[in-house]
Amino acid sequence: ELRSTARLGYMTDLSTEYYRLLTPSGFFLQPRAGIVREPVYIWANQKRVAERFQQNLNAGIEAGRTIGNSMQISTEWRAEDTRWSLTTGSGGGPYLNGTAQTGLLHVNIDKETSGTVSPQGFRLSASAGALYHAVASSNAPIAMLSTARTWQWKDRNIIGLTADINSYLRANVAQPFRFTLGGPRRLSASSFDEYRGTDTYLARAGYLRRIASLPTGYGQGLYAIIGYEAGEIWSPEAHAILRQDGTTGLVAATPFGAITFGVSIGDAGHRKVFFTIGRLF
Image (tube, rainbow, N blue to C red; front, side, top):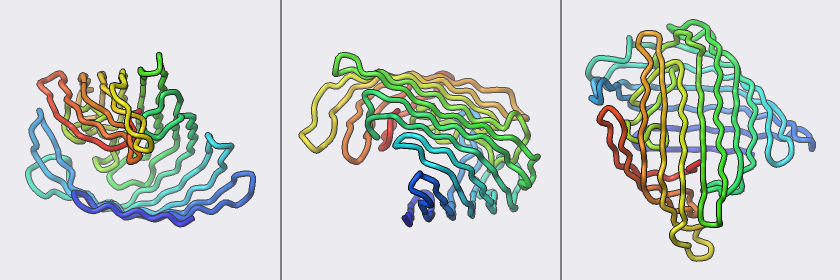
């Protein structure tokens, strides 16, 4: 299968990959390449102090095995050329232009019953490896974990929990390779990618109550949601930052994905109204 994606607008994201099943038992090979060009905002005390421009040109290959309908194990090697330049303001470190390489082992398990709002299910994605030969960075181990669990209670109620951990094990890597927090479903009361660091965790809990059904073929229903988020981020040059917020809103589970409209209020004076399309848990 040849798969290509093009996203244009605020950012430019062009990518293509070729999936080749090698054996009936599930072994596969998947080369891929892509380019991402996007503005990146640098924040200080909720104020935008700089705008950077980031460009990544990448190519890599993944090989592994799919086991049944819910599990995949693979290894990946990726090389990228990165440009990190300043557009306005000051912040986000020096101008960078150079290459980096990444090697990762992936384990993915998906036993959710729906890709929008799953009443029951479990999902786990774990990766471990290293970033090496990266511009202005020390060689660094990488560990990434994302997991989600949902339960249905008395037909109309769904409880969901998620946890995400991303870490370079406190190694000092350059700004464009760091992890971020902030934005809808990633500390919803904060601005997009407001926090940038080498080590992060994010925990989310939500309660959904179905308040209306959608016509047959148009989705699972309309839900009211109450949620809580807590996340912490650390970087070598700054103390750890912990942020918490509460959210409330409406979720429509449709064939196009989960459409969410909500309000989030957090600590340190953070407040946001947000609208998203995509998986909720």
